[in-house]
Amino acid sequence: MTATIAAGLTAIQAQESVKKISVIPEPISVTSHEGEFLLTRASVITLSGKDLLSTASYFSGYMQTYLGYPLEIHLPVPEEEPIRGEIHLVNAENGETPGGYQLCVTPEGITIRGNDASGVFYGVQTLIQLLPTRAGVLPIVPAVAIEDYPRFPYRGLHLDVVRHYFPVSYIKRYIDFLAWHKLNYFHWHLTDDQGWRVEMECRPELTAQGANREGEIEGLYPGVYKPLPYGGYYTREEVKEVVKYAADRHVTVVPEIDIPGHCMALLAVYPEFSTTPDEPRQAALTWGIYNKFNNVLAPKPEVFAFLTEVFSELCDLFPGPYIHVGGDECARKWWKESEQAQAFMKENGLKDEKALQSYFIHYVQQVLHAKGKTLVGWDEIMEGGVSTEGVVMNWRRPEYGTKAARAGHPVIVTHSASLYFNLKEARRQQEVAHRGYVPVEKVYHYPIVPEELTAEEARRVLGAQACMWTEYFSTPAKVEFGLFPRLAALAENTWSVPQVKSWERFVDKMPDQLDRYDLWGIRYSEYFIRTMDIVRQ
Image (tube, rainbow, N blue to C red; front, side, top):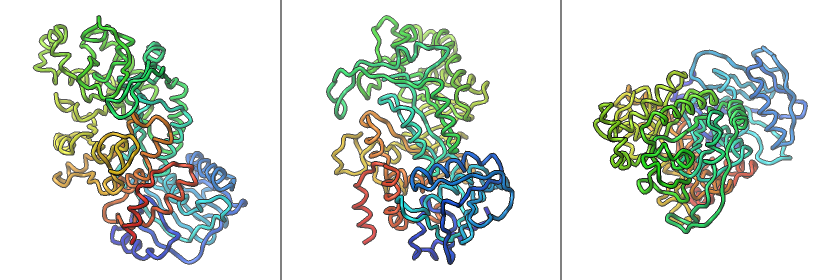
């Protein structure tokens, strides 16, 4: 984009008094003009090409669903300027920053010109924020020129569907949450100790047996056990449906199958894959079992054959570039106590159990590489050494992310103390959640790029994501209570360049954002409302 940061700041300062402009995340440049455009039932959406049809359909569907204004779509219409009454979508394909766009509203019509197709979609998201937040209110759009592009290429949100399962209909709604906030990666945590939730054609028994557990705990860990037959999984066709739905919203799905630890549900199906194969096995009935139960894979030929089959099929099922292999919280003591594991280490020249863990990661990385995919793993994958082609997802202390970037790894930041939305939002919060708290302001100000990195090292930071682990978030309402309004802060922190960010301005925009949440039927936490009142006084 051609706009400078300085110009963006000047434009933002000039618009402070214009209450109709309230966009999250904050754009690079916002310039208000005289006049307005009235959307009517006669308004039409025109496209520069068929590649924008999904975006046009998305916007038409939004207008119908939330404001009651169905809009016709005309394609292709290659004119540079819109005919009166049009919403004209143009993919400039100009090779500039992916996701960048220009939005121009005049009394004659609206033009959204994107650097690429995703940029057009993000321009539509900004346009949505200029529309009313109630059905029945005339959709009068203020005349404005907005120029914008994302700071980071990776802006993600995670969902754990293992501890608690959510149907495909809600997974789609969850992806809409990403789209509305200009996030572009959905990290889908599909396997863990408590269940295996993705159908594998090569191993149907994984979901036939591994998706089910006998019960779970109630209340904060260690909680109280209660019998509760629990299950659910996603078929291959449902996965394809979700992937298509996400792609239409320019969201890429990153599936996670967690290995070589967190495998109790897998070992319930294949006890012979364990270092203690004669022990009775079942999916975990509790949370927080790290190092207490033997949940690691043994380094056996049949295990590596299994990993080849499953990850190869996963690559075929998910077209995105990234496959997440977990690699976290591996209880290595079980390898240390296993004669078979120790013999394998000796035969392969592995000096310790950390090296054995890396052997698993390296093995799967080769499988993924052969399929043209990039491995992503939690930051423990570095402990025994791993190829710099692998992406490190930094969830523990920030210094692990710094170390990874300095070692040459691409890094995605998801620091648990600042970006885990399963932690409480406020100290006084009564709802059960993981210990610790992450207020909206902390999410907003979290420094995604560590200051100590050089310019070259900083470029290895791909972006950030928030995580939603669901041990204590068993229903959609509870999930949304954890996500919102913190997701708005994440959106602005990952999209907007630091020079245009302002906490005070963000707080001032949030009443409009909460009105949008009401329109969308989102249940959000109200702890932040008191913070808004304090900041705005």
